Image (cartoon, helix red, strand yellow):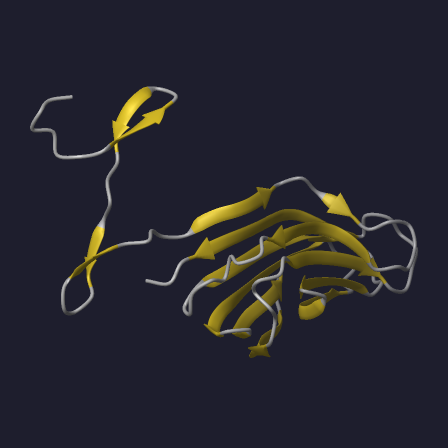
Length: 186
């Protein structure tokens, strides 16, 4: 590292690398960026419901306390899977701190893929705005927009549940992908 070297170096498994801080123009001056989307958790392990009528946790992640620290911080949750090829009523729910944020229902005789995405935006101390959408092969089951009042200084569970509410068929609801991302406020 030369005497006129412009930057700080960070140890990495491959040796020392130069740390770079990107900047953006905020309309008045250049400001150091806090970075883009950061994946907090991701899994591609398929998990299905049990052979009963109970709602079962298929995937979960606990958002660490204080993650939503600044107004404008966002958590984005994406999940997807399959409803089995039965005419039973099958439900998948995405929950944030115990509250059902989105519900997708399937009852087609054909295998049906489902997908959900939900975002939580911190708007103040203990207040959040939410927006989400769920879909299956050919339908948009619904959107959920509104307000929450969760304490961000506590850990917050994010859970995907599955349930066949009319017939005890195992794996008639599966979650095959679950991802939680953090997008810091600019």
